[in-house]
Amino acid sequence: MATIAMLEAIDRAIQAEEKACAFYSDASSRTKDAGGASMFRELAEFEAHHREHLTALKNSLSADRGWIVYEGRNLTKTPGSEASGRPAVGDHADALEALRLAIAAEERAVAEYTALSDAAGNDVGREAFRRLADEERMHRKLLDEQYLALANRGVWFWND
Image (cartoon, rainbow, N blue to C red; front, top):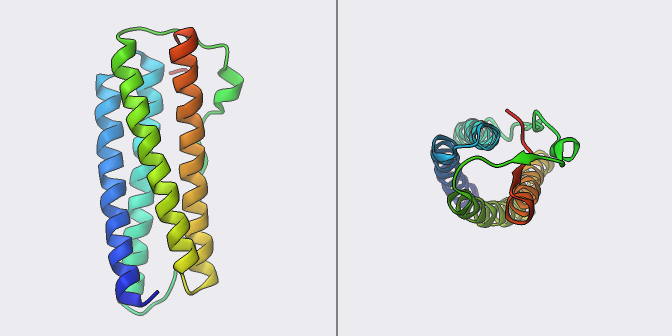
């Protein structure tokens, strides 16, 4: 992929991360359950972290300094250890809709970062986009598990 096309793709990714961050921040403020709100806040911070890396990458590529390494990051909690959950507080319908929208957005992000990884003409770039895709897959898995727990058992498993 030519540098200009890659920079344009990175711009689109930055915009998508900004939208994701705003979405998760809004979902956090609307979620009545403290654990659910905490989960959405963490996802907002994750997307802000992605935006910061992509902005630094864009600046580096624009200045002909080349690709920068993305180390990645992990969730602060492991939802599997909290799978027993606790009864949800507040309106399930709104939370389920937010989770559905978030799952769809994470699927799009995985596809975009996978395509960028395939298009990157550099091993460091391929690895950075692969890690970003992996993190978005991790978000998708978390959101899927939370959706199922809330829809089927009426519980949040992310503790505040």
